[in-house]
Length: 383
Image (cartoon, rainbow, N blue to C red; front, side):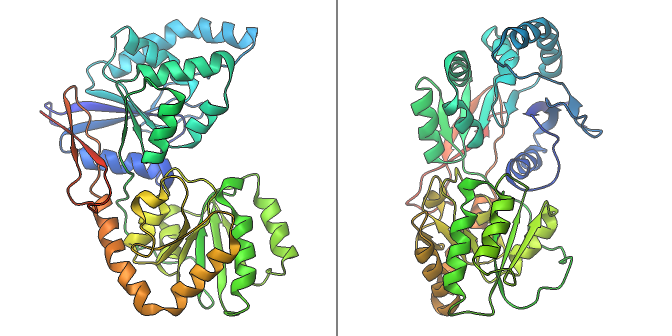
């Protein structure tokens, strides 16, 4: 390993494994910066990571006398461990911000660690917004104390600024680097549309199922594949499938390996993301690289990079009738779908080039290959 490469430290509250979402973002950034920096992965959660990742357990900050005393008792040792693991790095980049990062931000406030770039992804800011009292004050202080806060969409950046007006926030869209090339685990019977999303309320699987009950009146042979990480809504989704009489039309799969998910996307007639809230929607980029048409809702960061009738079809949230019509239009109008696919392919390939390369001297420039009507940023660094 060349001695000239500086260390760039990623912090995550869970084990880093190949997959979608935040893990895909972090692994993509690490891959993009390897020629200039040595990526280091520090896991702050309570499960031991595999070799190659550093385990540094950081307890969360919770109200209550006992919890606060425990946090204070471990503060000194955690400060020393954090200083040791970050010493000499060009930057420290936590992904998914929680109060367990308080010791790191205290080190930065004391100028005892490199610059800190906080990357927020949506659910972390939602947690901060719901907080109150001392927890809310600490979230606000952490965001305002970071050298930079990177949001994955302009919509999320605006949310951060409303919560912590003093925060130095910029937008860098997410990117994907993997093309689908893995075989499916089992044969698909007939045509299907797909939704890839965790089984939680904001992903609006209920709306999609009601849309499917409308679609099947015209396309009785079409199936729906639902793939996602397990969540509190899965049992309700299964019950709704039965209530709507869609038991023979819907396949539900949980915790599918990411490479297999990409193959399911690549072979779908259309990808649907019916979310009520979506800070970014990285699965739409995965569909773009697979040249699969998309139907999504105009919420959060989605409209920033998916132009309606340009890269896909956008609908209002909680409107199963709109989603059903958009899917029917996509599947029936091949010529329009192909026209939308061309700029979407370019969009996906352009966004794959986005990377963050941290350094003590950063400069910001507009990304030249993005659609002219959209503005985003790429972080570069000087040697």
